[in-house]
Image (cartoon, rainbow, N blue to C red; front, side, top):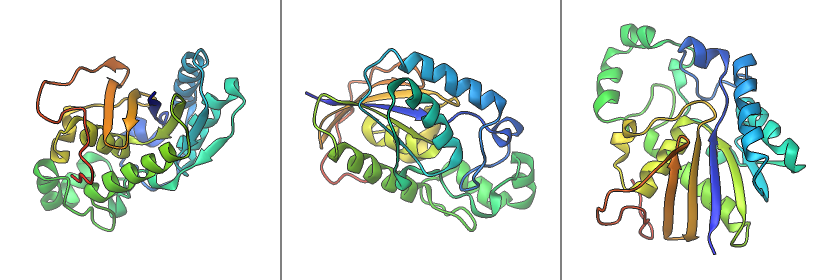
Length: 219
């Protein structure tokens, strides 16, 4: 019996709606984000949930708290599923980044996995720590349980790329809306499947390795 994981991106903040770069900055949900989280909570209220996890950032914890209410479950913090630290880019819009950091932006468009954000993290490192955090969560639960994990755009995209076998540099193959829901099944440590991405059914291409994670794989 597999463990089911419901990965939820947090609801929107004012910076999301303004198009400002938001990573380690600890913004709270705004009115739109609260409504998004309440809508997700209403949908997930109909499901049997055994545990709810969140990153340590406020926007994720607020989203998780609203989802937890119908289930009367505590929100457990897993710090490794926090968002990419955007360093000096925090709070900047795309146009501001284009004007001030054009060399970085050109490399980010073609090789985002390995390039270090100025003063921040590498996407590859975020993907690795998010994967490790998710596996720690799984290890705490027996099979046939359903877990909600509230995280952020880049950690979830890193997990999705890992499970689907898509190179992390191609993370733009996928899109996550605020409070978008991605569903995974963990059949064993090396056997993962994705059934939904951003609330839509996902059927992997019949490529070798798609849907499975080789032991020790790293991207």
